[in-house]
Length: 304
Image 1: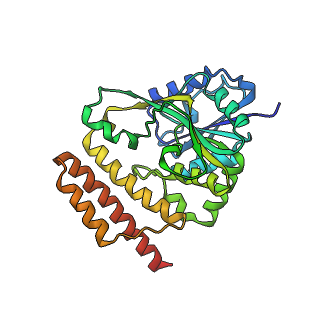
Image 2: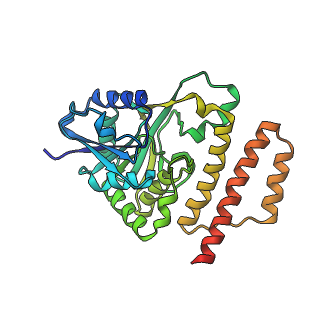
Image 3: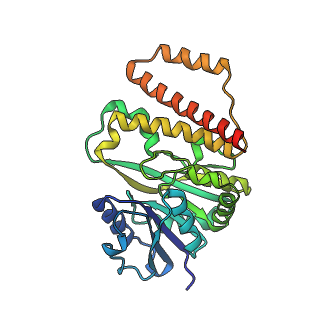
């Protein structure tokens, strides 16, 4: 029987209790295991995961060691070593709803014009979340919505994130070729302790580049396990800076080199004037990310 779905988990030094819950949720999927494969990509973890992870419950499971550090190399390895026409990326802190794979496969058959899609990403906080953190939950890849959204114009309202992203193989193949042609794309996502996070957006834009759509579907749901440290202000500030840096670099990768004018700088400064102290800190983190990206792009142009 031809496999219908390839589930790819890319992980680096995972939290063991979280990874166990991720695997347990996959073991309970309603889609028969004979129809899908499971690839656990160990991205240069300090301890070899194959020595301590039992996937014998799945008839089509593989544990693969990818020595090149970085989420993008790990995703590329999963794309190249998987078999099915539908790829589903699951982070090592994503607990899928029991019908996630079955629903994703059904959507792939109904929505043939869409190349990359995702669903609702709901939080499970290790500790209660302070009210002030809510404006920054988007940076934690949380998504909750009431209606399906799709299109072929890459706007933020319909961009799927990496958590639970569903991807057609034709898009994955095109993305692999793009990275080979422009190796700077390898630096658009997490690597070690870096919080840069733009590879999922790069993949979604690849679908649009092929003339396919992207979208978000309410029927797809997963729980994102969020440890306490990710709600600390210091972490969220670093994440804010990295996200804005990533946004600029993604734009540049697709030929949309942003330019900061004195008007835009003045407007940003004017908005800052009316903010409370915490909001100012997050505003300044975003500006640092933008400025760092523009500086790096300018240096890359000089070196080219």
